[in-house]
Image (cartoon, rainbow, N blue to C red; front, side, top):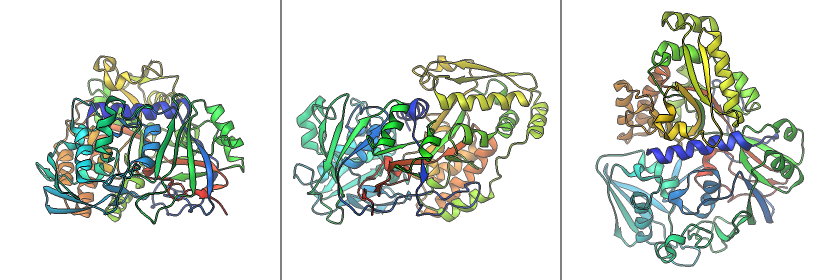
Amino acid sequence: MERGRTVRRSMAWLVAIGLLAGACGRSAPSNQATPSGPVSEALATTTPAGTKPVDRITWGTYREVNSLDPIYAFDYPENTILSLLCETLLRQQPDGTIEPGLADLSYTDPTHLVFTLKPGITFWDGNPLTADDVVFSLKRNMDPSLGGFYGAVYDRVSSIEASAPNEVTITLKQPDYWLPGELASTSGWIVEKSYVESKGKDFGTPTGGTMCTGSYKLESWKPGDVLTVVRNDNYWDPSVHPLVREIDFKPTPDEASLTSALLNGGVNGYYGFAMSTIPQLKQSSSVTVTDGFGWNSDDFIVSSFDGPLGDVRVRRALSMALDRQAIIDAVYKGSAVLPKAFTGPGTWGYGRSVFQQAWNDLPDLTQNIDEAKKLVQDAGAVGETITLGMSNELANIAGVASAYQAAAEAIGLHVKLKAVSAQNYINFFIDPKYRQGVDGFFTVNYGDYADPAALLASFVLPNGSQNYSGYSNPEVTRPLEAARTEADPDKRAQDIAEAQKLIMQDLPWIPNVLPNTELITSSNLTGAVASFAYMFSPWANELGGTG
């Protein structure tokens, strides 16, 4: 995974949860039980399908959209909208499984993926989807002159070719069973070649728009105001017919204004979390909040092994001293769960029984100050100082940093906070000079598809885009690389579980909590996807009125 992609993605989370974030309210019913372990409440993948037509709704995003060009999609607003407009060859389901989308996938051998396009697929302008459109769309990610965020996804790709008018063949340098997940995500959205070429540099802008195959199509885009999509009544799949005719996406950057709009019906839907007005929303009957499976992880990035945190005993002690339940209560208002690993049940898109058993076998991350003190003493680190990068302008970052300061000082460490503005917080991710003298900083990160490896690989592999400390453990690298080349899903899950167990011992990062995905809708709406899959695949196909 390339650096630019991950940095933008991670920072987007920080801004979203720190400056406005999501919301909560009365809980909606879940359609999937939560696996056993520290996850104690039922989380949802979807909500019950709507039954009544709805002419128009307003959906909130924390800022306005920057681009509708898929290769530049890296954050909530872009993904929330593009996942309705554009489609992928393979489609992520609400439970994280991957099924055929625009095409069916077959393998002639482990290094040749053949995608056969489904018949009758057309773009909004009526032109048929062709293999040339697919090749063009995927190769745009690989073109360094375009500066897209997903080039590294294709690092094992040798060629992408139209092997027939309705067939695309991807040839790999070596097997890569992580690639189908990536192709079912942001790097796999398909656009119309002729339209993109005709718009040139205007493509993806308010002037040039976009052209895709989805069940919703772009109607208008007023910069600084509302972006409107309308139902595609000529959608190629006759089994899909959304009940909502028009969705107006409106930037709602102020938490107080967002809360008011949700309560009075000015905004009818929103995805988010860690909002300070959760108690107020919970008391309202005008909104419904569904806690869905999250794929994201609130973590402490150990960015340097030069100081006390270079000793694994000190990292373990800091993790052991952390009051995670206090973070859940204070920062997430209860809408997060205790971790056993960096990725939770929402990321188990395959090999579920294997991942479940591995989860059950991992120890609970319980607070134990006395044992943590002993580890610090054994490491000879009593009285040493750790410097934490943080921002008081990002509410969630400030809250978690406070919990870390309390934990560190309780076990004999001194803490120095390097506080920066919200705007400058991104520099911890992108500027090595900014990280000098800093032992670690905070993030909320996620993978682009439901696989623990999608996040883990970014910070534990030696060339990982978020491996700032230089962490390297061959016993971790070996099973992860094996997983990438393993065709059997259960064996792949076993490899990742093996790596995950060692990662939780080494703690190159420290997991804090696993946030839920929170779907807030007006109480007379239902049918939206509730899991984090909404970021990558159509979430409003079954949205409609209640009753």
